Amino acid sequence: MVSYDNTPAAEDDTSQTQPIPDVSASFARIAAGFSTKGALGLVLLDASEFSQIERIYGFKAHQRAINRLADLIRETLGSRLDPQDLVLRGETGRNEILVLVFRSSDQSRFYVEELPALHEAVLAGLKGHGSRVAYPYVKSAIPVHVGTAVALHNPTLGLETQIRHAMDDARSDARLSLRIAQRERQARFVQLVLEGQISCVYEPIVEVARKTVHGYEALARGPASSEFHSPAVMFKMAEDEGLLFQLDCLCRRKALEGAIGRPPETKLFLNIRPTTVHDPIFHPDTLSRTLKRYELRPSDLVLRSRSRSRSITSRSSGRYETTTESSASSLRSTTPEQAMRVSSR
Image (tube, rainbow, N blue to C red; front, side, top):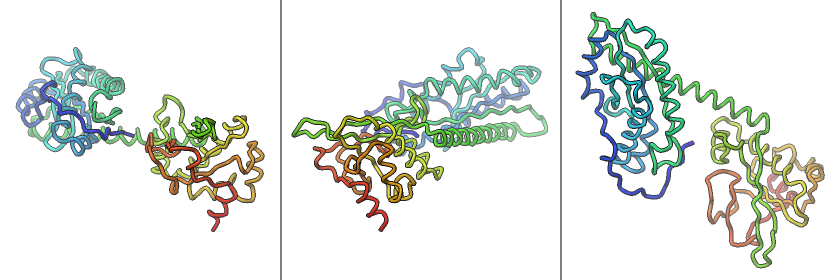
């Protein structure tokens, strides 16, 4: 998930990056290279999600980000490109970068082996340095999807027809790459839920007047160094995939397991949702066994409904993130039995 910085950014000097000509302005060069060499290789970067920058920060910011993306591609491919090869902006209204490479049609090795290698090099460049492209507007790399295509010159068809057909093929390949990436991401997330790859950190809640730790709030985290480490990303993915209830139950179970052996006389604060009443370990008939299993007394557990609790300052938009309040005594506390009775009504 992309996180946009909500603070106003300083005015950008777009002249710091090299402006990129678009396909229309360069069509004569493309047609000449294609007809001379008899073949054309195309790598297309679909940067459609960059449109968010223009909506939030305006045209100049968007132009700078697109120019930086083109600069990154030039830098990444470097000596792999010949002088006649082109790095261009897509057609008007499209957030695209096109890399057009002109090699003779008898250079089959280039189109079979080296063009896919260019594709992989672009992906590696985006993975390694993509986060700098949209800085300071976006805190992480904006997804860019890459497709390739090859066109062989057919003298019975117009050059524009053939070139546009190659661009359409590359766009289709980029969309296919997107769908494959989405399916793989879905599979990784389902695996996370099935295998319980969740851990919890415990945020101390301090009673300021007495300078003592009143309790600990359980905050869920996905696997370290993974795309799902952030609770905001995890819960957004769970919502999109219809797995919100399952993830919520998993986070709560992991919070209880990790709290065994906490300091005595401290409370455990758990965030709950209205659907918690359907969680088997929190069902009224099994609640007492749940508390005993995790070495808790009813008075040790405080359930916080996010829909009711008042958040003064949120460190993240993610579910299970901590909220800061003036003192522990200001928290609206509910015992497990009270919460289950309310939820059952």
